[in-house]
Amino acid sequence: MEVIAAAGKEETQAEEVDTRPLVTVQQLQPVNYTVSLTSYGEIIPLESTNLAAQVSGEVVSWNPNFVPGGLVKRGDVLFTIEKDAYEAALLQAQANLSSAQAQLIQEQAQAEVAKKEAESMPQNRITDLYLRKPQVMSAQAAVKSAEAQLRIAQRDLDNCAITAPYDALIISRDIGTGDFVTTGTIAATLNNVESAEINFPVAGFDQHFLPSNLAHTSAVVTVDNRAIAATINRDLGVVDQATRMSHLVARIDDPYGMRSGKPLVKFGSYANIKFAGKTLENVFRVPQELVNNSKIWLLDEEGDLVTSEIQVIREEGTYMFIRGDINGRKIVMTPPDYPLDGMKVKVIAGDSKLVATTLADQRG
Image 1 (cartoon, rainbow, N blue to C red):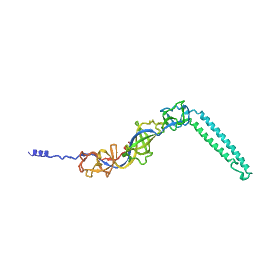
Image 2 (image 1 turned 30 degrees about the vertical axis):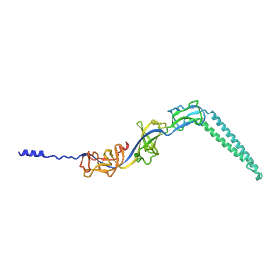
Image 3 (image 1 turned 60 degrees about the horizontal axis):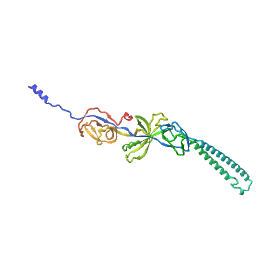
Image 4 (image 1 turned 135 degrees about the horizontal axis):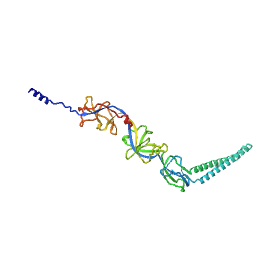
């Protein structure tokens, strides 16, 4: 009977059950984090030129690359205009200059003779006209006029060969062999391929994170899954009235690879751009789902749940960058479904440090 009573007493003893919610925690430590800014835009030429003839005449030849889609280098002759008349005008101008120079020499010689004769004459009889000063000045003016005409004739002859003002992509050509063009006739449209630009928007919430020295900031442009080096060139200086966004301009050097041999980047391509913004100092990076109404759950010294007010500095991807009096504190990574201040919890994972970023994050 005593054995049976002892067994029954043991069965009625209730085992104590730990009902505390299970949580995992990580230790917070601040670091400096460089913000990564991204945007998008269309690749456009740095400049576009409506190429015009500067002299009149018949088109006698054109460069084989002077066709839509053709690429030409700075200084390449694109087409030529018949130049017989301009060569004749140059010869005439040279002859006129020689004649004017000869006349000046003659007048200067006569003036020298008059000057010597005047040495033996009464002073009141010597005049500028007698010394032939007006004649010499007129001859000097004639020489200058002839020199000016020679320069114009030489310029017109040089302009019979129309050259590319820069490394260019031919967009359109509106002339052909045998066409007669006049001064100012639009012959073609060219796009500058020495540099390309990307005009891209920056949202209002990103503007606070732009680098203080924006010009010459390095950037990476992604086109068709290819990464291309670029440089931020300038801020357009206005805010779009419809979107309230600012716009920046980045430049890509040699987009058509004429000088560098780089892969082709076509105008009109849609591109994404990424560049480094300001560096946030002494911030903590935490998953977005852990922040609720600018508060996070921490463990106090007794291991109980407690909320802490924080300041959200920036959202980036699935993380938030925050500041607060939380250095070295333990953040609850898996809070209970219904957490309460002072709630007893059980930590089931070892502590690890949760920092704003890692070297791999910065490079990514």
